[in-house]
Length: 138
Ligand SMILES: [Fe+2]
Ligand SMILES: [Fe+2]
Image 1 (tube, helix red, strand yellow):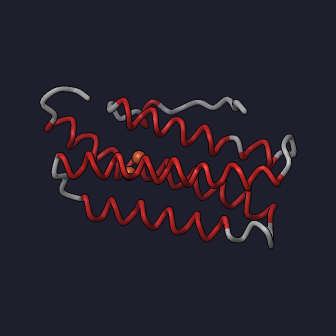
Image 2 (cartoon, helix red, strand yellow):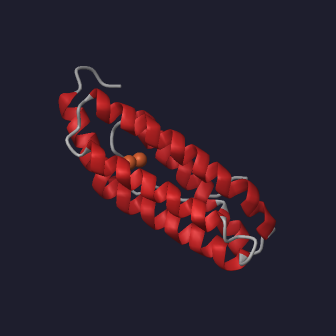
């Protein structure tokens, strides 16, 4: 399913792989709006949420590999943030059967807010560091 959304310019980091993964993840999260509005059944959450988790997991690995490659100074803290997020959404997915409507809304809010804040802080710092240490653009 395709859902329209606009991607703020200040969230473009200038590392193409990272930027395209961010956009793909947010696009996936935005699909949840159709469940919240009733356009799609709540049961679709069972398919969508694990995809958000899986693509986040792979995205985090890509970032962590890049940070290791460039010896980024805040690697440990950044990695911890990724892990905390994955734990948080795993717990949320587990509440779906007891409370589907609230879980979907909360999952949507948590994911959206987390990504925007995380990209503006941790990922932006990482991108600035990597770009200033890059020999050739990736
Ligand atoms: Fe990221
Ligand atoms: Fe990150």
